[in-house]
Image (cartoon, rainbow, N blue to C red; front, side):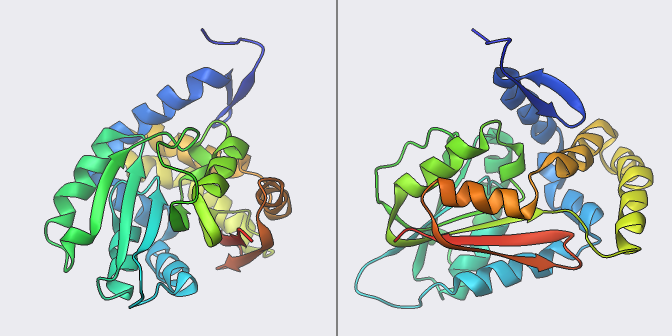
Length: 254
């Protein structure tokens, strides 16, 4: 039963906290087959470079005495997982997890054509209640997904739980532009162009309108860094990309 006293945002709307996940799911069911194109629209294609930088920062090992296990959360289409596996030359084992079955369907189909398809598995799961054992992963990655989680702090707590000691979390997310001039231009681009382009590409502008609004509601870099610290992560830092259009957050379980 929904607790009507607990509310959160869904874009610019205020909604019951327990209702948000279903609303987010509907957005991504609608755009699953064109999700990467969606990120192209929202970032001008630069998200591909940011994702490459994220995997470079992770620097997955290419060999070792035991498997190197990564949980890529909200990674349904597999673009982060493929990068990690390729960077490790097939050594890393990546579990791609997403709450959205359509996103996982797209990723699992794509994975059949990867260089190392056997190194990825796809698991439907909620970031707030992971079905994995304590201390079972060497790294946890999530790209452009954490802002869609209704209870972000709970998801970060879960990430900390499933990481081994010495494990690392990497969170790539759209942020708040802080370069004078660029902030105004990016806001105009987001408001005036992204939803209409979404309508042309998918026939529906509403998912894109939500995603634009969700970026603005995401915690500021200092606040999100403090949430990582609250979850127990140490040596937390964030790196702005492209005038802080996006930011990469990282922390360690020590």
